[in-house]
Image (cartoon, rainbow, N blue to C red; front, side, top):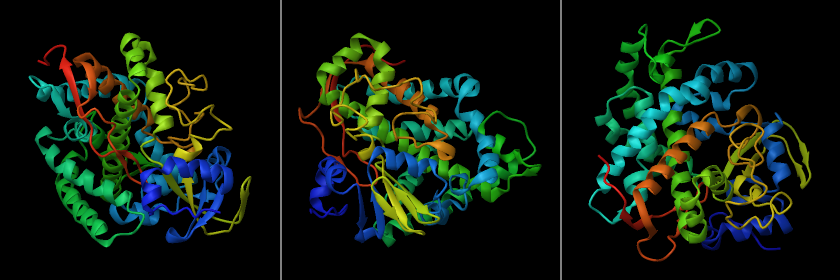
Length: 404
């Protein structure tokens, strides 16, 4: 039986081959380099997200060293109370009325830099910056401070992917955390007791069971928002355009019929999720369809492999925006039929925000660009283990109109 090692050159070159190998030969195996059990079948990954036996205690080392105890590692009533404070800002009426205009404004401001050009590096000049600009706007912070947030975001993102526990990466993230918290400290003090509809002011005056959130909790949530919210959207948009440009026929379909946009976004999130794996820790021994996992074990839930399970999706390795299994109406809820945003009580609170950012970005980029193609006429290489995305995304195009 072939050994599967996340850190091998062959795996990093093409993890998709190994996802099918997992399904066919090793749906549950022990990954010695990370001392973890790996699951890849759709039904097992779904179970791991829904069953409280699979706890989020892994965040005690993935997130807590940077952001303290946040809601993603809470359980039960404590988790529900904390989640209810922020949910309104990420869905429904508030998302449409308050956040959508700022998303459009931030996308337009980045497109202004494309005027007079026919080649751009879409990752460096758009996808890696766009969600950070949106987060800064949501928090009601000065636009000129985006340069700091961009630096902190990249340090946090590298740490979250640091499954090899590289000390240099961890220290850089801790330094970024200290700078981030020093920046926020006086701003939080100033906003306590004041009114405002920005997310930071809401957090500064929110109460959980009659008790106001303390500064440590507010900083922790803002740090988590920057890390997780930024990374999800950054890599999701980059992956979507890599997929579309790799399939010119489907790009042409989307350009001709924008009603397919929801399908294109959802299929890209299924085929190329921004996070390929999420960790959990078992509270007791558990039996899955693929085998038994002991108590207190770290479990690697292979989201990307689950999304390519042949028992769930027909021709799962194909990118197909006309895929019949797509259920776009429920894809951004806890009832989704893809594993990208998780399930159950820890379903990603920012799923609808991320989808809205992807839609605005895609609509505006396609409105602005025609004859869109890879600048070097070759599909850019993907990189990453924990998350996966194009190393670069140089595109060439003809501008339809200037952004004013």
